[in-house]
Length: 497
Image (cartoon, rainbow, N blue to C red; front, top):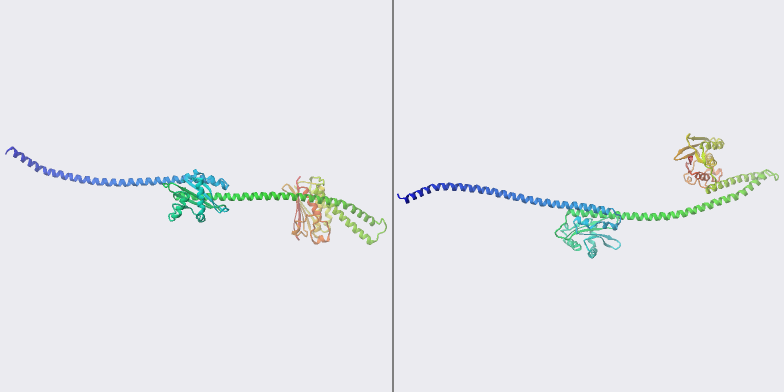
């Protein structure tokens, strides 16, 4: 065997041995490749899942950012709305309400342009009251276009609902018309609806096509237009109230002037009446004195015997002369008290002593009619500031009237008690009483209640009027309470000393 054959044999052996080894290695590599492919599939799947998660995270982040932006916008808008609300609520002048809505507030709300229109009844058209973002020429053009199609905006007010570019998809014609009129890409137009005053609408818009509005914006503008409406209503009500107040002041001033003039006339008339009564009373005294004197001389038969018939008539002359003298004296006293010519000697007086003194004078009249005269005077009743003689005169008049109108076996009670810095005196009787219609006239001069007692007993009707003037001269008050058939209570007050 030569070397060449040996090498070939060795090579064949090597190849024979190598083939199984290579086959084994190939099988091993194939398994490895399959494992790697499986791992690659898993990895690819994991990467795809991670990619989806990453996309989800990105989408979520974008949505969160959008929500955050919208939330920030809403918060900014709410702050702006609060500032506008505060600004317009601090004025009650209609002309100032729209001026308080500054451009900066509307920018914070996210709008580039805004205008407000109110309906003018006199001119029968809409008039602009707010303008932000438009030139003067442009707002005049908008005004002209709005009034040329005023039914559209009147319907908006009538329907009481806001319109916006996001909710007018079914009304493309109206949407495009509003866009053209106000030169914007998106808008909100909301009615202004005060209960008092002029109605109108509030418009806001965005010119840029890259910025859009949403439902939240519409809600804010609706709230703002409602607040503008409330502010206009408050201003209108204030204006009406102010005008009514001015008119009332003018009427009060005019009425006061008229009453002052009337009071002056009343004072003049009262003075003329007082002067007349005083003058006439003085003039009456002289002839009355003469009549009474001549009647007395004739009755005394100093000029010769007088027949009984003549004497009876002379007695009537004498009695009627006494009545006339009494009436003249009362008239003079009333005139003096009214004019302040009576010198009141006012000082501290014991009311109990005055009542006791007057009671002694009236007691005989009470006994003649079997009338009980009672006194209920509190022990701690303070002294009063009074002219003793004048107040005794008041007691005599009131007690004499009580006796006059109280039937047999009746009762008269005198009470006195302290009340609010005064002493109140009540003279209560069980007499025939006073009709309700006479209560307001009872203290008038010459007034006499129409009843059976007055028809039988004549009087002047001056006693209670004189009593009233005396009490008022003492800074007191007098009044009466009565029911027919149940008696009367005359009350008056005197200041405490």
